[in-house]
Structure formats: structure tokens, C-alpha cells
Image 1 (tube, chains in turn brown, yellow):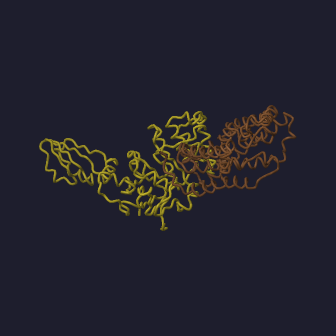
Image 2 (cartoon, rainbow over the protein chains, first blue to last red):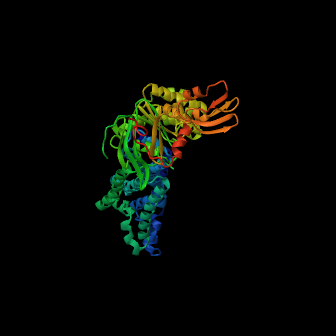
Amino acid sequence: MSMPLFARTLAWQRTRWIIVSLALFGWGILIPVFYTAFSDVIRDLANSGAFPEELLSFGSGSLFSLPGAVTLGTQHPLAIAMLAVFAVGATSTAIAGERQRGTLEVLLARPLSRTAVYVSISLGLLLVVAVVLVALIAGFVTGAALQGVLEDLPIEHLPMVFLNGFLLWGAFATFGLAASVSFDRAGPAIGLTLAYLLLNYFFEILGSLWREAEWTQEYSLFHHFNSTEILAGAVEPIDLLICGLAFVVPIVYALVVFPRRDLAAPA
Amino acid sequence: MTETASNGVISTRSLTKHYGSIPALNSLTLDVREGEIFGFLGPNGAGKSTMIRTLLGFLHPSAGFATVLGMDIVRKSVEIRRLTGYLPGGVALYDSMTGAQVLDYLARVQGRAAFRRDELVERLQMPQADLRRRVRDYSRGMRQKIGVIQALQHDPELAILDEPTEGLDPLMQQAFYGILADLRAEGRTIFFSSHILSEVERVCDRVGIIRHGNLMAVHEVRELLARRRRKVSIQWRGVAPDATTIPGLADVTVDGDRLFATLHGDVSEFVRAVASPSLRDLTIEPASLEEAFLEYYAEDAVAPTTDADGGADA
């Protein structure tokens, strides 16, 4: 672990970190607003039978309850895009980008093992992922308080929402870092990580919209982060286990592969 | 890999690196002595950078053994880099940082105080105002200066410099040569890769020539220059004498009163032989390392040298 490299990783992301945190905080505030504004309408629509209930939901989320709205808030494409800025963009370019630019040469000429480089950068980026998730959850709480529906949000379960969310987004982040140590250029690393994220997302959304394809959700990491259930106090240990495994396996891969790779001169 | 005794700041024994089936370094045996400036010469793709990257742990050797500062390059790579300064070829820096921030950051990661920075900044004429500018606004020469400073600012025991004068103007090249001379005077060792023969000739004590991953020869620069063939042109008053009586001449052509030839061996013996009242003009072209270099590269069939005579230092 190198403290200067860890600090630089945080500083490197500073502007984006602040902007995305503020954006997610704002998004989090809006979710309880949507809930209070539209939940009755949506419920009436569902009761009328005019629309199948699955079309009134999105992924595992819906506006039928505040916990459902929170889930919607974490699975909405806007939230996915903002969280992916770090979990996909920053992680997959962290090492491959340095390699592509040639700055990894200068860094690895210092007394740092590649393991130390990987660990320092990973910890920095995982901290950023944790902070933006906290900003999102803080937004939910703030929005619920502003709308006067805080009692609908079981705050005691929010730490578990954070943990499960961190394992989910951390899994994409560690996958991005594993891709980053595997390629000499940032493009393939970003592409692979983005494909992994989109495939997971596609399986989750496909299964939620089409009953015959519901089985695909089991293969999506997003399906293993269900805020509605967590906020109802029904934590599924298997969800934590699956997200935890998806978090850890890329770390093990990177720690094995990166120190053994030959780093030829950049083209 | 078999460990063998080493006696240089850099010692390699049959060091080999293959990229798949393509050989990049072929059983390279070399010793770089403490306190010398060693020039590592070869054209692009010869294996210079592969050698450097293997020494620094960027590449893993396929076979053979090497030590740097007495430490195994595979097991002690981090320790080696603690005591080494490295300037990569075509150095890349963090564009969003200022020059000063880059140097501060790299010194912190190095974990050694930047004892020499002020001196290097002054000698390479890098004003504080420039150090406060972002690297993205730097010219190529300024980037190279920062590259040199980051490699040497922590006063390393060994400096490994890959094409260090690339992008430096002639004035800065002179300043850089002065810095190298001072480092050598202080007992530091410099391993210097280049394809600019004139600078190797000027600053290096010894030179190794690499081709297609094979170490073709290692020589004292002085010795190499002394052994060089020189081009001579002699003009006499009247008819030229019989050239076969002049020692060391070859490839003789006579054009009227002028003789052109190649001179091998001792110049003083030759000068004594041609000195006569009928001598009108004598030109001896100075020995150039470039010609020595080209000679090695012209000899396609020459086998790589790995003994004390040419390849490794004894």
C-alpha cells in the first residue's frame, strides 16, 4: 500500500467525485418526491387492471411503497449511469490508462510492488464508490424528511442497504480493475467492463418485464440487491454471498495476474 | 534460473527474454562496473529497452540470471528500484499536474528525499515559473528535463537512462553531460541506452553493442576508437611512393599525386613512415564510433560475443 498513490487516486477523481456525489444526492432527494407525487396514481392504475403490474414497476423497484421507490432509485438507468462513472469508467482506466499514457512506467520505476500499486488504486476507487453510494442514500433520507414520509423509510436498515449496494457496485469496480490490469490500453478494459454491467442489467430488466424470461434475473447481480426486501428487514444472505463473491473473485484474479504480467514498452 | 556469482553493479548471466517464440534478449552476459558510464548501443528493436525493462522487473526473464546492485532482479525488484533512478525512453508524465507537483509526487512515492532536485533544476535551466506550469503545456524538451530530474533527484546509486537526451537542445545536452560527469566523479553508476553514437563516444567509459537481442561486443570507448580504421588522404610532391612500404594501409587507391587508403592500427607508426620532404598534405579523418558501430552491424555472419574479449567485462 502506497499512501501517496492512494491520495493521488482520490485527488485524480476529485472533481468528478464531487459532481457525481452531488448529482446522486439530488437524485436521491427526488425519489421520495416521485413517491409522494405519483404513488397513488400508480396504485390506482394497477388496481384498475389497465396496465399489468410489471409495466408499472422497473426492475425490482416500483412507486407502490417508499422502499420500492428507493429500489427504483438505485436501479434507474440514470442512477446506473452515474454510479458507473466510477465503478466502470474510473476503475477500468485506472491502470490500463496509466499504461496507455506511459505514466505506469514512471510509477513502477519507484520502489512499489505491482500488488501495492493495485491495492492503493483499488482502495482509493472503492472509497469513491462508497462515498457516492452514501450520497445517494443520504439523498433518499433527506428527500423522505423533506416530504414528511421519513416514517415510511426504516432507517435502521439503511446500513444493510449500503453494504449490499457497496458489494454490488464494488463487484463492478473490482471487475473493472481486473480488466484494467489485463490490458495495455484503456479501450478494451472499458468495453469489457461495460459489457459486463450491461449484460447484468439487461438480464435484470428483461426478467422484470417478461415473465417467461424471469429466470434471467437470477444471473444478474442487480437482482441480488433488492432494497425493498432489505428495508422490510428480510435480508437474503445468499444475495450478500453472491455479490461478495463477485466482489472478491476479480480481486484474487488481479492479484495473481498483474504481478506476473510482462509490461513491454508502450507502443 | 541458476544463480551465479556477480561482480558488477549490473551483472547478467545468460539473460534471456522471449516474447512467445520471438527472442528479444539472447543469453546476454554483461557486467557494468561501479562508477562507470556504460553506453548500451543498438538500433531500434535491438533489445535495449527489453534489457532495461527486464533489469527493472517490468519484464520477467525467460532464462538466465541477473543482479542489480548485488540484488536478484526477480526477488528483490522493489529494493533495486529504491536505489535506482530510471528515465524511460519518451518519458510520459501526468499532464494535469504541474512540473513541481510531478516531481513532489514521484519523490513521495520514491520514499527518498529529493536531495539533488534544486541542483538539477538549476543546471537544466528549469525556472520556477515553468515548474508551476502544467505538464500538458510543456514542450518536448521541458518534459525530458522533468524526466531527467525525476530520475536523478533522489540521488540514486544507479541511474538507468533510456535515450536521455531525446528532445534536449544542444545546450541542455551539454548541461546533461556535465551532470553525468559529476555523478561519475561521485562514484555513481550510469547505464545509458542510446542510438546517438556521438554522445556515447563523448560521455561513456565503455560501450556494449546489441543487435537482435545478442550482445555483439563490449569495449572501452577509448580502445574502440583506437582500434578504428581511419580514412587517410596523402598528397605528395611528385610521384606517390610505393604504398606497400607504409605500415597499416589497406584499400589503397592512387589518383595522380594523391593517395587514398584505410589505416589500421597505430597512427604514430604511420606518420613516421610517411613523413618526408615530399609530403605536401596529409588528412586523417578522426575515428568515429559510428563507423565502428556500422562495422559490427555490417557483419551479418558475426556470432555474438560473450567472453571477456568482447562480450562481458571480466
